Length: 114
Length: 112
Image (tube, rainbow over all chains, first blue to last red; front, side, top):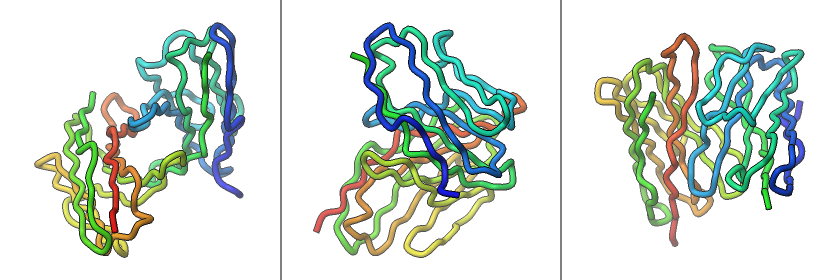
């Protein structure tokens, strides 16, 4: 296993377009998190899954954002009608339940909305 | 909700010791993490504290006082490669679910 994988690494899109990002967690990890990070800031929590169940969503996650983890393995994060303010690094992390204390992060998807 | 505070920037000299502080306020504390993040890269795990006291791991140590809502990360024998952002993160179990919230990070510059 090579760790948490995110695709694409970079995405440039025009304002108003829809984008979808994918995260493949470490295979035995049942918890998956999405974060957004802008320059000079720490990662901001967006949402997290335990297996296929989406347990919590941040207020930051407007109606334009949706995340899925249909089979409890990979996850997708979709942003509809992108805005310039959506430009950020989108990070995915996975952990193994409550006993494992370390979250492993993917390299992120850098979104630029022009 | 949570409130996590840490200094924005710090500068220290190669070979020296630096302490990065973090204070937090949370209703359902269930652990504190320190992560290192080099520019343009993903955060990587450094340490975890859930009980009061000091956890030592090589050149890095992390301290927690739950009653004071306070933690610090201590870096010894600083190396140039330690220049990075250091993120304090708190796990909270209020609302029945466990969520990890990050501070804004402390950008550490190590100078010769």
